[in-house]
Structures are given as C-alpha cells and as structure tokens.
Amino acid sequence: MRRLWRRVSLALALGGLALAGGCFSLRSADNAVLRIGVVEDSPPLVFRQNGEWRGVEADLGRALAARLGRKPKFIAFVPSRLDAALLDGTVDVLMGGTTLSEERRVQMDFASPYLVVGQAALIRSPDVPRYNTAIKIRSTRAAVGVVAGAAGDRFVSRYFTQATRIPFAGPDEAVAALLEKKIDLLVYDAPAAWWISLRHEPALALAPDLFAREEVAWGFRRSSVALRESANQALADWQQDGTLETILRRWIPFSK
Image (cartoon, rainbow, N blue to C red; front, side):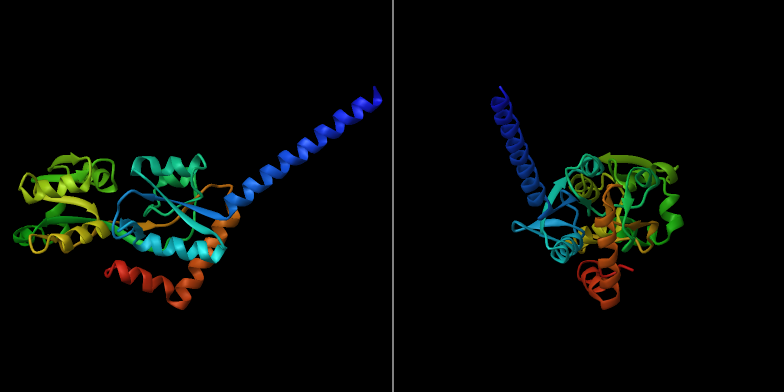
C-alpha cells in the first residue's frame, strides 16, 4: 500500500511539474509578443495599407516592441471595445490614439502623454470664411455631423447648443454627407480630419482653429507597472534623441 501511495504521489508530482512547465512555456510565449490594441482604421494614427500597419502608433508600437525584445502584434477594435480589450487582458497596451479622459483615468494607468491633439471642423472649401474662428464654429446653427461615440460627438453635444447634431456610424458616411451638402460641418479628431481633407482636396478643407485640445497617451492595466515604466523610459529617450519628433512629423505635420 505504501509503495502504491508513493507511486501515486510521484505521478501527481510529475504531473504537477509538467503542468507547471506547460504554464511556464505559455507565459514565455506570451511574453515574447507585445499585444497592441488599436482602433480599426484611424489614419494617420494607425491604419492598414497593403496589409501592413502604418501610422504614428504603428511606428511607435514596433519601436517599443523591438526595445523590449518582443514581437509586435496589432489587434484592431471598434472604438467602443478598445478600453475593455485592455481591462480584460486581451491586449497589453492601448495605442489607439487614446486620450486622457477622466473616465479612463479611473480604470487604467497611462504612460506620459506624447501628443496633444484636438477636435477640428472639416468643411467644404468655399465655406472657410463662414467658419474661420472657433466662435463661429461653436455658435453655428447649421447641421453638424459627428461620428457616434467619438470625442467630437461628446464635444458637439455639450457645446454646440444651437446646432443640429447629426450622428453617423463612421467617418466615411459623415464625409459623404458633407460632400453631398446634407451637413455643413464634420467635427472629428484633428489628425483624422486633416488626413481626410488631403484625400478630398480641393473640395474639403479644415477650418483654421482647433479646439477641445486633449493629450494622447498609451493605456496600461494597473498591474502592468514594469511595462508602463519601460514605455515611459522609451518615450523619454526618443524625445531626447529626436526619434519621437521624426515619427510624429512623418504622419502629422501640425503636431506639437
């Protein structure tokens, strides 16, 4: 009986070691990859072109992964799913142009902000004189398009008290409505609005003033202290040696 118990005990011990070894191997494999949460299509911050991730966050994500000795894996989500993907462990870091809102500060930690952006009004080029100041834009009684749930939507809902707010599922539908004169302005994230204006020159233009400025930073789970600090050190080094400015200017000429 004692021999049988010893065999059972040894088998359980070996099984436990095998299981632990399997878990260790799984964790090691996970640690070899940096899972980066991004928005599905948000140029010039991050987007796909010919099957390759491009944009500010794509360049920075690859640089951070290389610095950590990991392989970058970009995982795209709709904006409303992005925060949850970090909190439930689907990704390790958010690089989706994440802004520092009070709601997010309660749920997650952030690296140091690396970019200041704002909201911009995308308009038809002949209408530039009508919307050449922030006051004219915010006091308009016109039809103002927004992408539902985006930062511009919240801004318009709060401050454009005299306008008619018209939500759209995505920027493509909103831009089509602007070109077809179904709306008079589209309020959207400044980098994306600038990118759209380039694609539709000379029909569309950005109004001169930016407003509702926000800081962009990478989001981390509160338990990812070491990863967050590594990101902070990387950003500090890149700011000092000019890497950060080079990447930003490549994609967002007006960035500060």
